[in-house]
Length: 303
Image (tube, rainbow, N blue to C red):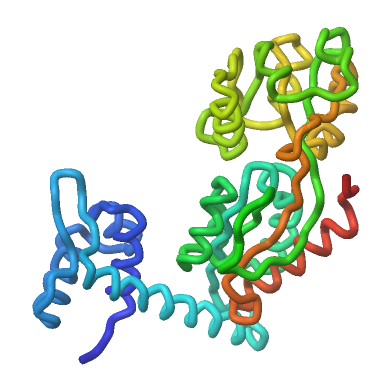
């Protein structure tokens, strides 16, 4: 029998969205056309590929087998495109990256700008996630590479050290908490905090830490970026926990705020790039890694 790449792509999108209509849209098909493709697959194999319910759709065990090979097929296609791009820069490619909040806010933007200029025909899909979720996404071949930090189990992946960093507490200069040279999360959550939005990876991480203390973070203001966090802290809305790299980038704009080190292991983090096998990723991914590591070596002060 003949295998159709569109069927593989449809299965990939169904697995990600668990919704046939959205999966059809992502595959550039109408919903009836997508449904007919699934029915044809099931007819050809004599096996059920999809389970439908009022909550949506999900792949059966047979569908999961099909998904496994769909991931491999599309990975090999991107690797082929990457190799061919050495000879023809006009070849279209795709690169999927998952990274945590700090990596996206502090280390990726300039690199991504440079990369897109040098790779104008590569579409980059960048998603923010928790580091522990990132390793699962990469291991499951749902992303080409991940950027993680902290003490995360990466036994099923290869890693490349990227940079050392730390989280710090920031507050207006006259704030009582600055009387200590080092602080803990237990100290910080006695006060009102300015945080990133609820769905951000770093906010989820801090919520988990506070739950371990059986305490709740008193969130006064939630914003969408570290720039806005610093602006709110400077205005006296509360204190905040942010990467030192972000504070160093923004302190000249807000000279009335200071930082203190956080005297806990979780605040000191090493960033790593992870992949299933760096020899087996596409040239597009290899080029991005080279661009990122070079940018950090040349421009970022390691702390």
